[in-house]
Image (tube, rainbow, N blue to C red; front, side, top):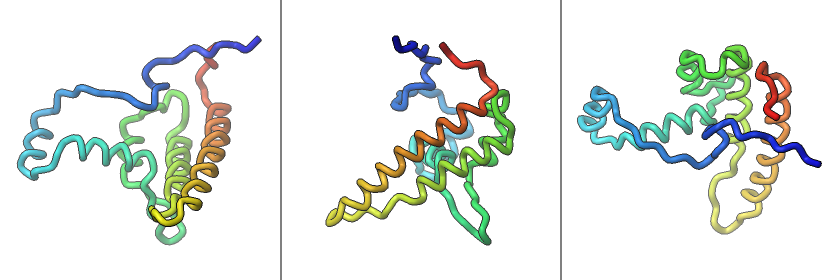
Amino acid sequence: MKKKIAKRSNVDDRTQTFELTLPLPFWHICKMLNVEPRKIVVDLFANIGGRVRISNGLIYQTATDYFVQQQYGQSYYTENEIRQMIGELGIVTGLCPPPNEADKKPFEEYVTMRDEYLKSWIKKWESRCKRKPLV
């Protein structure tokens, strides 16, 4: 008989809807610059989740420092482990082929490779987590 794994919370749902009250200074700067707050939030998510640039053989992610400074997950992983996790996710994101309507095969191959990579990434980092397993 399979064990049922308890759902931790909303964190397990990939698609989520938020209703936010924007901090007043943030709202004012968005208005002043004519930038939708949603764009900034979505860009921040994308930057944390995987935009990568490589320079001098080193991997840089623009939002990683912010994410680490907020100490998200540091009761489960060290700062260096979190940086490594984000870097590894960024690498797989960076391998996505450019969109080309004429040839979908490279994208399908990327999706297959990405899904396999994410399975092994999850297994690797779950085994290092300092959190008690949910049963």
